[in-house]
Structure formats: C-alpha cells, structure tokens
Amino acid sequence: MLDYIRNCLDDLKSKNLYRSLKDRDEMAVDFSGNDYLGLLYNKESIEAGRKAAKIYGSGSSGSRLLSGNKAIFEEFESQIAADKNFESALILNSGFIANASTTQALSIPDGVLIFDKLNHASMYFGIDPTRAKLVRYKHLNYDELEDILKKYVDCKNKIIFSETVFGMDGDIADLRALSYLSQKYGALLFLDEAHATGLYGKNGLGLSTDFEFDPSKTLVMGTFSKALASSGAYIACSRLLKDYLIQKSKGFIYSTALSPFCIGAAQYNWRLTKTLENERRRVLELAGVLREKISDLGYNTIGAETNIIPIIFEKMNDALSVNQKLAERGIIASAIRPPTSPTPRIRLAVTAAHSESDLERLLEALK
Image 1 (cartoon, rainbow, N blue to C red):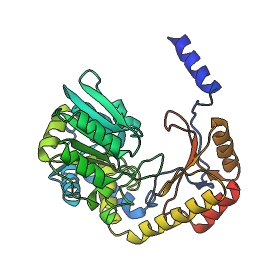
Image 2 (cartoon, rainbow, N blue to C red):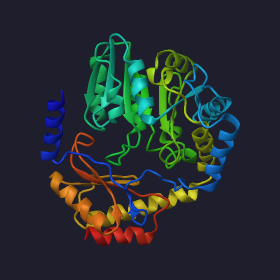
Image 3 (cartoon, rainbow, N blue to C red):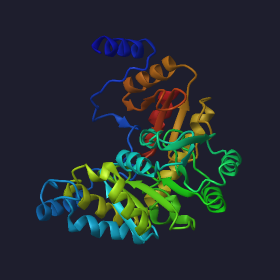
Image 4 (tube, one colour):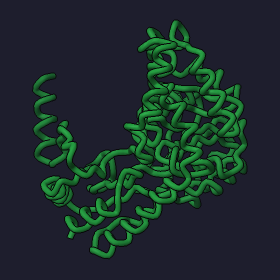
C-alpha cells in the first residue's frame, strides 16, 4: 500500500499535478479567495457569531438528530425558506457535504442523475452507481440535455443537477431552460448556488430567486462559506424533500452540527447581504473592466461573465509559471489544474475588498 502511495505522489509531481499547502502573505493582494462581499472581518458579523456562542455554546456537541439541534438552526432555516420561496430549508455543515449527501440520498433505485459535465466534484462524490445511472451533457448544452430527457422520458426517477454560477469557468447556467426542461419532462431539478449566493439574484440571495421554479420539484443549495463569510450550507426545498433528507442524508445524520458561532455570523450576513446592492454592483462593474482588459492583453478568459475570471493555458507549466510570477509581485491567485478543471488555468475572483489600484497592479503584472 505504501509503495502505491509513493508512486502515486511521484506520478503527480512528474505531471505538475502535485498540490501543497502554502502560507498566505497578508501584505499581498488576494485574488484567490471567495469572500466576495468582503465580510470576512466585518465586526458586526463577528459579534453576531459571539452572541450566538454565548447563548448556545462554542460547539453543538452532537448531530442535529441527537444533541446538536439548536433553536437558531430552525430560525435560520425558516428565514432561508421564506426568502427563497420554498416551504423548508435544511442546514448542513458545508457545501461539499450538502451536495454529496443530497446526491447520495437521491441516488435511488432505477434513478437517472443528469449532470452538466462541469458540475462540482462534490456532486460526483455522492453518486451511488449501484442504485442510479449517471448521464452527462456537454457544459451548458441544453439541446443535448433535452435529447437525454427524451431518451429517459419514461423514467420516473430522474433529476437534473447544475450549478447556477460555475465556480471554475465563471459562466452562468440558463435557468429558464433548466426550469422549462425539468417541468416538461417531469424531472426534479437541483441547483448549486454556492458562487451565486451574495452577489446574484434578488437581494443577492442567488439566481434562482429570479425565476419561478416548481417548488415541490426543485432543490437549491447555497453556501455560507463564500460571500456570507462563515461556514455551512443549506438546501431549500419542499417539506417532503426535507423530511426525506433528514432520514437519508448521511452527511446530515452522522455529522456533528455546526458551531452556533458559524450560524450566528451566517444569519447576520444573510440579512446584511440584502442591503448591499451598491457593493454587488461595484464588484460586477470591476469584474467587467478586468475581464475586458485581461482579454485585451491576449489572455483567454473563455467567455466568463461573472466576478470569477479564469485565464486558460494549454500547458500546466505555463499556468504554474504565471502563478509564481504573480506571487513574486505580491499577487495571490489560484493555479487550478486537472481534475479540478478540465484545462490548466489561473482563477481570479474579484471581491468588494478590491480597489481599482489592486486591479491595475494585477494587470501590470500580467503584462
């Protein structure tokens, strides 16, 4: 076993796919993080977390089905459900756990799970191939999606999975098409709003709030760990589906519940984000300017349309080299490599913490 592990690591190193943890330079300009609204050090948010901890304790001491279910969880779930126009919501420990354990619970006998090929790894992680079949369509190709739905028209247990804002490509799903096709062919619809929460949609609460979905046949996941600057995630859905997830979602059943501090901070920021329209507008305007100027320099941003801007490279060495040269100039960016993304890239994220001078510094380095 150890020989296999050593050989695996050596192989990754030889292909420039080996990852390592790095210390962050606090003086550098960070374009790698997901603190989209700049709330990570917001004093009021931190104080809201401290107040929750004083009332409910520093931790939850058990899963929510045992000792870990606090009133603050159910209060926040009710607020999320109301704001997202659903009957119910269920809080889980992270976006990864929410996606993986919901996919696992929905991998039911004779089921068909229909994925956009670029869905997050957490959705793939939850698939149970002994119970359900995975079928994938090309990224954002809704003609192919419809062909798949026609093929499985008689299958009663089918569900479409898609992100709304794709975290590696920075593009946006056609939610109108997904809503139409899911209803036309009788499929459930699962939407991952991890990167949309805080920046997009009505009051910044996700793109799904801008469309009318069948709330009895739709599940929406969102995270507290990006724009909301805390930890955890939610699934908004019908009461029936929430009850089912409580019974069948292993990530919910067997995980110690989140710290009340995290819930207190996330709930405060959920409310706060509704008031931050100017900040959202500024982030998206800065991102638009940066995308255009990066393209003008000759870099390939593959048609990104959000605050997430990928710079695509043909060779992993080139992406790593650019990433290192940026670091030498005091700029932190993410070098993304397969299998996280299909092609090597530098992933940039514009946030409310960035200034115009930060963007100019990045552009000057990219020249």
